Length: 187
Image 1 (spheres, rainbow, N blue to C red):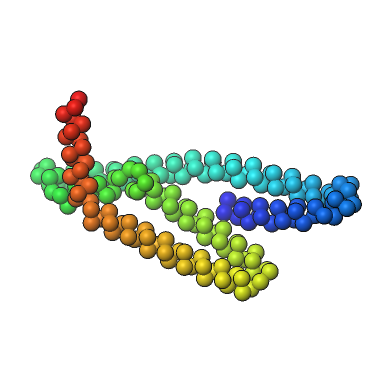
Image 2 (cartoon, rainbow, N blue to C red):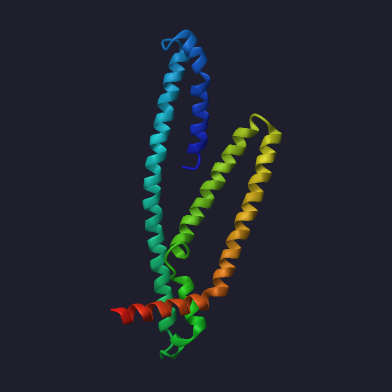
């Protein structure tokens, strides 16, 4: 799936490159047939990309649900291990459980999506580098340096997000308790 955008670009380039000769010689010529095949291949690659996006989304959601269920089971087993319930009032335990079982844009499900998204980007960037390397080595080197810089910046931003969340987890927990208390009173 990560190689499809590169294949799409190459096939599109072949189709566009054959337009002048096909216009000059007609669709019955070798250039015209190359244009027709190129346009058909572009259409096919587009359909495959769109279809694989749907299939991969359902696969990732299923995998995310399995990871989330496993994380919930492990969190439940860890909280039920002591013979009393006094430990459930400890703020550190509540923060750890909240961090492990968070739904939404962070948490186990988002980790699966991010991991596969990163690998898809690595494969796409690597195949693009190989393609550009075939034309200009210095341009491929520039692209590699740019990609590594972006990777470093993205990782630093992700680490900042994790640190922010870890620092502010007690406040988030208190806000959630307050929200639950208010919504409970309203009902």
